[in-house]
Structure formats: structure tokens, C-alpha cells
Image (cartoon, rainbow, N blue to C red; front, side):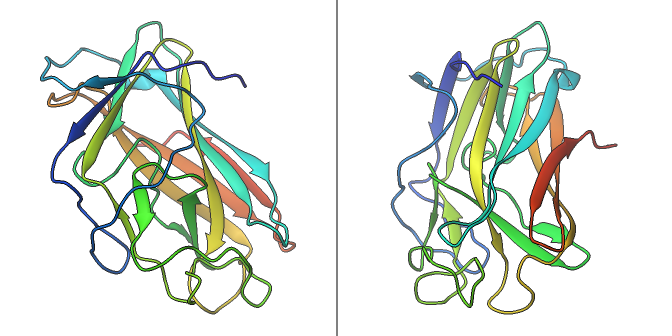
Amino acid sequence: MGYTSLSRRQFLRCTPVAALSFAGCLSASTPATETTQTAQTTKATQTTAKSVDASSLAAHASVVSQGTAAHPPIVQLGVTNTGIEPVPLRPYHTSNSAAVLEYSSELDGATGKLTLYPTSPEHLFTTNGELAESQTDGCWRFLTTDGETPRVAWESIAVQLELAPSESHSVKHALYTTGQDGPCYPAGEYQTYYRVSLSELDSAGPTKLLTYTLSLDDSGTVSIGAVEPTE
């Protein structure tokens, strides 16, 4: 699938840095970004909410590469505007969720938990050390180079996109086993959710829950897709 440039991208800075995490709160700087589109940065202004159709947004996901000894599995989470009108798009919780699809909650499954972390985060970072770049006991676990559970934080910044008809936005994530011990990539089905608001910054509007389902087989092979949730 090809991806075209975003029509517009807006930023609204709140506090200098708000660090919310899995296990703690600190301040830190922000690394560079990776995204499937380019975008023009403009100053956010208070606007009137547009009337948009939430059903025009469609979630999609794909496996970029399976895991190897050199890197964890890489997946891509995305969303496409399937409608005929432009759609403003931003995180539902603008004060603590970085850019659209940049932060993902843990993937819960009956057999364990997995963690997604962007391969090139823009507004997301760890506050207690760099992520490990090698396996631990033959497994890609979500740990720092010191073997600690990373504390994930993000800038208190709202990032708005505007998707033209047929435009898509997606972010690549590395997939890790959550926790310092336990089974490595337990086989089973996992889900994660991401809610977006279809409105301009500082305006009210409809929301959409994007749902992604990931599966692991007994060999550790990853597959992923998107489902339409019943809200």
C-alpha cells in the first residue's frame, strides 16, 4: 500500500514535558521520528469542530519483518481515511498520548503480555535508560540495557493530522515480550486499542476506537490485523 503526504500537521504544546509511564514519572528529551508520511508543521489555533464521519476511518496493520537474533519482530499499525472528505485526527487524550499511534498499551492475551514500542519514536521515550539492543536469554524482552523494566514517558504535546481522502498514517513498532522472566513470546492471540478524536485541536468531535489483533504461533511467528470493534 502506498502512503501519500499528510495535508496538515499541528502541534499544541501543554506543559514542557509530562512523563507518564508503565512504572514511574520523570522528564527527558525527545528523540527523532519515523513515520510513513511527511507533514507541514503549523501553529495550532482554536477552531470550530468539523462534522466528520467516524466510519470513514479504517484501521489496518501488517508485519514488516519477523524476529531474528538481530532484531525483534516489527509490525506496522495504521489508519486510512476511506471517505470523500478530509478528516482531522488526533489522540483522544491530547495531554498524555504523544502522536497518533505512537503509544500503544500492552497487548493482553490469555497466555501473557507483549509490548509495542515505536522503532523511531518522535515524542515517546524511556526515562531510565536505553532499550536493550540484544536478546536476554535468547528472547527479545522489553528491558533496558541494565536489565530493568523501561519507564515509558511522552511529551505533553497534542499532535494533529489531517488525512485527505485515501490518505493513510502508520507507525512501525518493535514487538517485545513483557517482563523480565516467563515464557518468550507465548503463543496465543493478543489485542491492543487506540482511540482517536476526529476533531480539530481545542474542539469537540466524534471518536473512533482502533483495534489491532496480533497472533503468535508455537514457533514465534507473528501475524497481525485490524478488526472493527463493537462500541
